[in-house]
Length: 190
Image 1 (cartoon, one colour):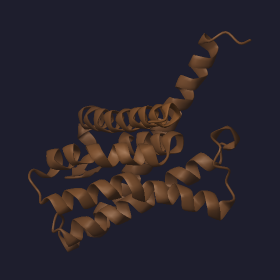
Image 2 (cartoon, rainbow, N blue to C red; image 1 turned 180 degrees about the vertical axis):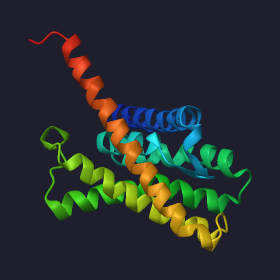
Image 3 (cartoon, rainbow, N blue to C red; image 1 turned 30 degrees about the vertical axis):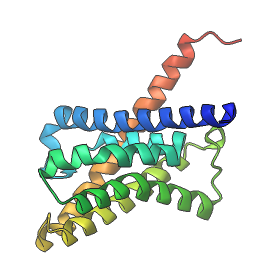
């Protein structure tokens, strides 16, 4: 096998693994730190993993979505006990790829540059709002179809999930900005 292909496969596998481990780790951390914001199974009023997912997808693209989708079943089964494999697979695809699709659609529709170096501060809330609406919308539809939430709770669940995802995105982006600031201050320039 070509050495360059092997190196690319190793690099992409690392992106998938880092994405998956980060997704799961921040889910459990969020469940512990923000237990009081738990609204219903699968819904938190502060959901930092949504922001971690946004950062992962901006940095790693499709490889990040694959990592999220591959590890999401751990979280789904933790939250909803044993569910059919098809429901788990649909949830995994929604969790990883619907936000990525939203990011790509917004980037194309707004003329937003996909290069992170040219990303403007105004773009981050727009990206956060986009993924905070699309993922909850798709998940709410899945919850309804699979009978995980009664029809009478769908609207309140959707709004709670959207709010939680948006607040989680803003919190994660703020923490990332602070970390980057201190990292740059710590590393000597030149």
